[in-house]
Length: 125
Image 1 (cartoon, rainbow, N blue to C red):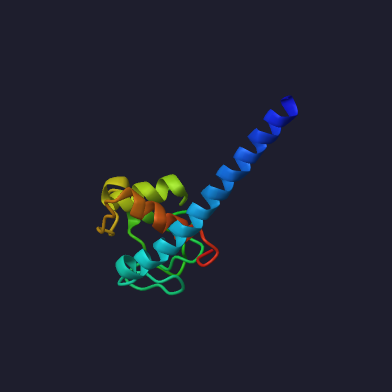
Image 2: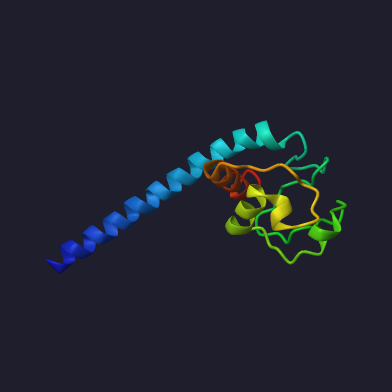
């Protein structure tokens, strides 16, 4: 009986993990579309434009690209970009880092999640 229960729990975990992975892939695909529509006027994955390039942004310290001139507020920030910090930044950049130049907000939490999944994806890493 315990073996069946244990196997059931393992199966449920694998199912939940598979669903989470599928959701992440779907969010990343939606995030790529959102990025093109909402971010690409100022940002690129591989080139600095008005804003810095985003290749490798996930896990990088904020304001740390040597070939981009950030605001003093962002270049002196100890922030490392992860799910939480990117979510807070996208929700309200100037509230999260007073003195930063980015003023565009992403109000919808599901849009922020999708953008973050895209920034974490192999397409941008």
